Image (tube, rainbow over all chains, first blue to last red; front, side):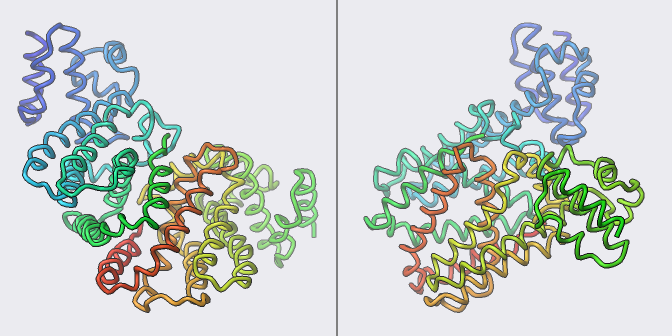
Length: 244
Length: 244
């Protein structure tokens, strides 16, 4: 209980919410609790200090453990970024699913996944350029398209698949395979636009999304035209295969 | 003539082509010649060493001048990257314009601008992840959407404008304003895809471009539908305004 107590103290001291404590509270063994504590502190540091200023040394100090212990649980800062990605996408799923249950309209359902996804990123906006620089190289282990990021990426792909399959209006079946991955890439591009968005409350990104959805609604009937279907599917398949 | 002679010697020693010598050969005053020499050596270094390994110190040594002299002409490595951008886009224009003279077909003309643009980037592919990491932040002075990059960016926007205005098939006039900038951003996204392309000869990027152009050809008549025109223009205008 000592570590949990320390964690609690740390959390209250830093004004954290109950939600952020959860992983260290439910961990069973001492090693699991230490791991969860390090993770929670790292995630808060990414939110409060950004990517560049977060170091293993700082995290260890705040967790009251050695750098060696921190490295035992997480070999590098980038392993902790993967924890952040997972946390963000789990909260993305938690925010999207109840809303998906309220609508059978395809475009509205896609809008729900995009909007709840952007909402999870919002607390990181002022540090987004740092994360982008660190993650954008196809050689980066924290590239969202890297194999290391597959678990959190699959949450997003799964949400888009859910949005499509649960809709009343059905798309031609040949889109079932590639479309969720292409939409996940669309979400990454929207996030890229959001990084560059200096408008109050990211109003431009919201407008881009709503205009894009409106255009999609208007042009969706055209997808059923045979002449457009095949080239569109081939294009989406090529896009969906991108990886880092 | 001493510096020009040194430059010549350096160029031959390094197996450079006549093209790369041109700027230092035509420069008039000694100061201009020194500037051109530093620039030429920096551009070759970016091509041969990439972004990370190119330093002002190395460039100065190879140019046979002091670091102070180099800094007098170019305050930072990123000023030399801007010279690289300009060089790449001037060659892009030189490659595109003779081909634009051969076709009046809008889609073919857009294809010419995209293809000749990608061809200029090709020598830098193995170092592209480094350049991407350094340039992608909206806070980076070498971001292609930054004010520092406006001169080279305007060459690309101008080429797309030329491709549109010189085509036999006319678009609705409300697209004239925003479309060239939106296409320039499309070109940057294509270049992003190209950075991630590990296929032989970047065959996947070529396929993406050709499929995209084919789909554009098929869907272009739909742009004339009033119901799609306004939302499409609004979307393009929003995209065209992105800046770093």
